[in-house]
Length: 331
Image 1 (cartoon, rainbow, N blue to C red):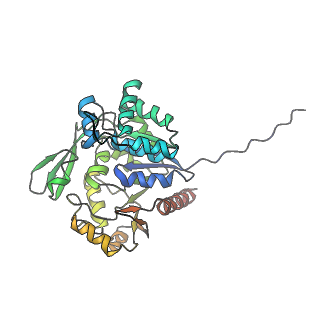
Image 2: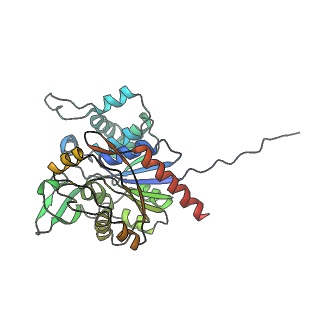
Image 3: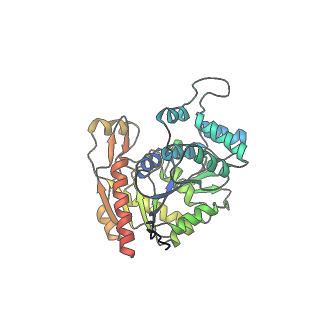
C-alpha cells in the first residue's frame, strides 16, 4: 500500500519592499534581514560624489555606492570579508578614495554584461538575503529647483547650496524602472520609504517613471521611516508632516498609512554637535499627523555613538509587528 506523508503547506513570508538609499537604509536592513520577511530593496542610482561619481563617469555605469552598502547590509559573510569589502584605499594613483566593494561591483558589471546583472551576480556571491534592485538600469542626474529659482545640478551639490528646495527632478526624465522593481511593489504586503536624505536619497527613486505610480496603486501598507535629525541644506526646520508634504508634492497623491519616529531623548552634547553643523531634531507634529489619519508609531529608536544611528533591532521589531497586524487584518 502506498502510504504518503501529507505535505505541510509552507507559510508565505510577508513581502516587504524598502525604498531609499544612504546609511540609514543600510542600518535598518541589517535588522530586517534577521526577521522572517521576504525583502526587496530598491535603491537610488543618482549618487554622483566620491568613488561612485568617479566610477560612474569613467566606466559609464550607474553609481555603485548605495547599492554596495545595501548588499553589505543584507550579506551573509564573515566579518573579515565584510571589512575587506568596505576597505577604502587611502592612497595610490587611481585607487585613492575607492572602496573595494565599489570596484568589485564595477568589475562584476563588466563580467556580467550590464549593471543589473552585475548586482544580481554579486548578490549570489555575498549570499545576500533578499533582493537588491537599482531603481533604474541607468544612472540618473538629480537637479533641484531652489526657492530663489536657481537650479543646482548633482546629488552631491544640492546640500552644499544651503538653500530651501522647492522641488527636485531627474534626468533623463523618462528613465524606465526595472520591471522587477515594479513587480515587487505590486506584490508587496508592506512598502517602507526611508530613512535617508529626503531629497537626495528618497526622492530620486520616486521620480523614476512608473515607480511612484506603482506605489500609489498598491494596496500594501505604506510606512515612512523618518530621520531623527534634519539635514542641513535639505530639510532645515522640517517637521515629520513637512517630509510627507514634500513627498506628496512630488508623487501627486498621499501615500502613507503610518510613520515611525524616534521619541527617545538625545544627550545635550550630541545635540550641540549636530547644532554646530546646522541640524536639529525633526519635530513630530503628532496632532497634525493624526488629523490626516496617519498612524504614529513612536519609540526610542536611536543608538548614540559619535553620530546618531537608528537602533536596527528595535526598528525592525516594530516593522515586523506592523506587517503581521496588517496581513492579519486583511484576512
